[in-house]
Length: 336
Ligand SMILES: [Zn+2]
Image (tube, rainbow, N blue to C red; front, side, top):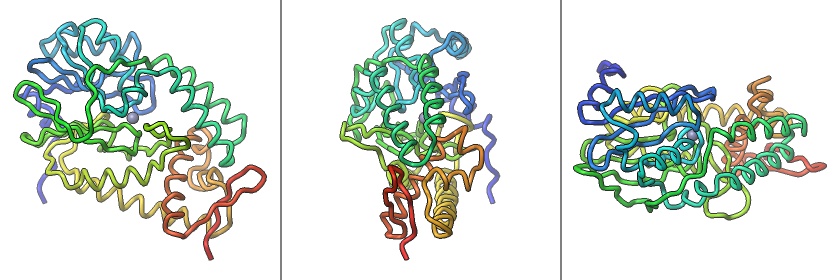
C-alpha cells in the first residue's frame, strides 16, 4: 500500500503552486479554520475566519508571512454560510475593496445575516421542542447561539456564482460545484487542471462533517433533508479525480474516494443502530440521541438531533420507520 503523504509535505507542495493555507483561530470546538490565499491577479482569499480581533490579527500575520497584505486582496470567496468561515469577510472586503464571490443561492442568506440567524434559531427551537428536547435546553442553546452571533457579519456578495459556472482567476479556473449537506450552501471550488479542490466543510479528514439541519436556501418553508442531500453530494464528489482536497478544518485530503467510502460505511452502521433503537421501542429523535450519545445529546442537542433526524429521513424514505404525533411530540416507530 502506498504511504500516505505527510500533511506538511502536501501543504508545502501547494504553497509551491502559490496556494497558502492560513489556519485562523475560532472560539468553536472545531478549532482553527483553514483559509487559503491564492497568489495571482486578483490575490484571492478563500474563507476569512470568524469576526474577532484575535482572528483578524492572526489572519493578518499569516497573510504577511505569505508575503502579502490584507489591502492587496482583490477577491474573497466563501465556501459556505457558517460564521467560522465568513464572519471576517466584510471586514476584509471593507479594508481591501475586494470583491466577494459566493454561490448565487447563498447571496441573500449571507447579506441578511441578522434576520437569517434569527430565523435559523426559530427553526432549531421548534425542531428541538417537537423532537423531545426540553424547553430549558432549547432556550439555553438559543441564547448560546445569540451570543455566538457576534462572530458573524453580513456579507455583500458582488459576484454571485451559479452552480456549474467557472470562477476565472489569472492562470486558474475554479469550477463552482454546489454540494449541500453540511450546510445548504456548501460549495466546492474545483481546479480541474491541477486536480486541487477547495472543499470547505464538505469533507474533513479527521471528523465527519455534521449534516446540520437548516432552512432551505430557496426560501421554501420547513427544513432541509440534510443527510439525504449530503449523501448525494458525497457521491458526486467521489467521482472527481481529486488529488488534493484542501479542507476548511484539519489536514489536506489525498484519498477522498476512500475517505468518502469510510464515511458512508460509518453512516450505514449508524443507520442500523438507530433503526435497532427504534425497533426496541418507539421514541423521539432526542431519546434516540440520548441512547447513543448520553450527555452529549444534551450539551450538543441540536447537532445530535440533526444527526438522528438525518437518519430517520432515510429510514422513512425506505419504509423502515414511520413518524406519528403524540401530544405535540414526534415519535418514531418501526414498520412491522
Ligand atoms: Zn461549516
